[in-house]
Image 1 (cartoon, rainbow, N blue to C red):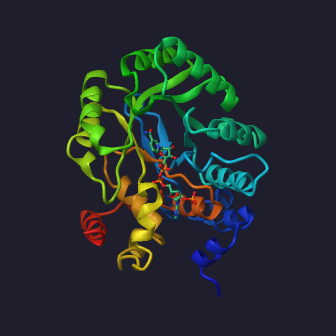
Image 2 (cartoon, protein in one colour):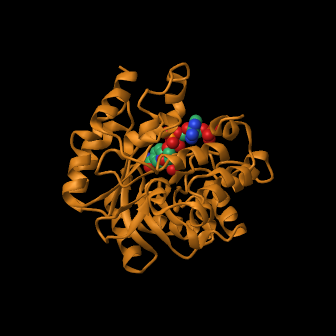
Length: 314
Ligand SMILES: NC(=O)c1ccc[n+]([C@@H]2O[C@H](COP(=O)([O-])OP(=O)(O)OC[C@H]3O[C@@H](n4cnc5c(N)ncnc54)[C@H](OP(=O)(O)O)[C@@H]3O)[C@@H](O)[C@H]2O)c1
């Protein structure tokens, strides 16, 4: 008989993936006991500034949503989204400077009427000055086919003072519910920490992975102390981690931690930092979306399990 993992990696059918998904809500309601549900439902964590909860597995759109319409990749994204939302996911991170990702995301959400079930994070990106920032944000709303977003982040700290002030203005107008700042390399994290200390945004978004752990020194403890929610980008090092473990079996404790793939191990590693609110892995492949969602179920990693993962890359 095919294992679940083999089956998932060889089928592209969303219906088949959904039927097998342990978090499938219909299956849970019909079959599962309360105890089962606590280990299979997608976990949520609190946004400190409001107390609202969001699911710990979000999704990114860089690369994965930068595809042409009517291509096989575009068709696959329909299932990527369907699986994400059916699996309990809501948080989707995008940016106006990910070429056409906002257009593709907006079109697919509208087509499947999924906007009400999603929690959208986008950015003010690569602009200078209030007027350009505002024009970009208004264009983003059109591209995403929405009248507001949940989170507006200043991308890579560009034109920070002006764009953060604009994001706050838009928050006061109800056009975004939260404001944040982002970066994607460790070299920026000291500056990011200074900004978080001074500005106390609702969210910060940083890179963190089993091989890139600099955020543990200052940014993550600071976010925890100040009550700033944290999103993690590049938990797979843009996918590079997979080639490093391609001939390496999963650790022998993986099953007891509810882990059946390296992707789940990498995402659980990031989530095992208590300051982290959610991870936002990007994929254009339905079976990988199902895989990534599984990292948001089951127990957290212990210190020993974290150390064991780090030692794989030592
Ligand atoms: N400055 C910033 O604010 C900033 C910078 C970077 C990223 N981000 C955000 O963070 C998101 C995530 O970062 P990222 O996309 O750079 O990198 P990432 O999530 O670390 O890696 C994405 C890569 O992993 C592959 N992948 C995904 N799931 C997989 C699985 N289960 N098994 C095997 N391979 C898998 C994807 O390939 P396939 O698509 O082929 O599956 C893709 O090549 C971005 O999309 C973006 O939204 C923000």
